[in-house]
Length: 310
Image 1: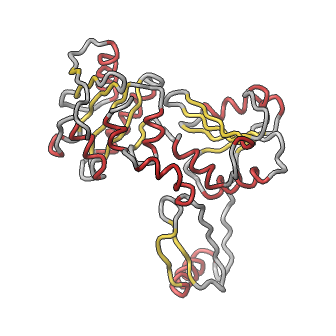
Image 2 (image 1 turned 90 degrees about the horizontal axis):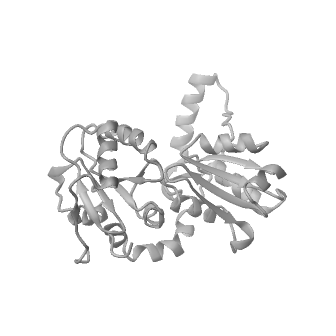
């Protein structure tokens, strides 16, 4: 895949990302106490981005609580927990029930990594979690020591993070492991997901070029997800938001401008074949036909090698 537009757009930032993302993706903690001086609000990566004065926060909380619960000063937030997988059928059903499943396999739960896993579950709701200590389940999934595994439906991929093979494991490293492998039915391309996209064994990519001002974007994504279900393991669906400056290089590779968007293109990462979908309504059926024609070679395709470094 050397020289593909996706890898070229990613550039050298991945090498720095691999070594620094653990620090960038540190988990955040939230405390509501009457002695609080200030509260940090994390951004999407879990990093503190601003501070809210405690006086303002406490005023807002007191107004809300007075309205909803009388004059009570206690608010109870349910704690997120991983689903317990008691046997092989329940484990298989859980894994098949979601686009990306995260499972903690614990031969010995009385270890620090079990606490790291629980912290991950509490602080990062973007995944569905399960865990098991059942010997039949461990044997079925060929687990010999404590591991955290990710299962994704888009390409029937599984990857295991084996604790004893991971130096100085902590919650941040677990988070990074999941993030770089987090591919969905339609995956948004960004510096973190690019690692998993480039490493994915599915070589045919559907690229949905869009930007933040495109109308009806959610409806298009809904149609793409529907099409992706029938093409799992064959085509990787990628959302390319050119509002991100780095993604504009990929748009340039396909000789597109923002006035062309929204637009769908197929791309073969091995041969650099590419084809742009004809304009018209973007429906699940139209997208599936476009993909199958490209896979079979029935459509007239443009074959071109990357000669210019983006």
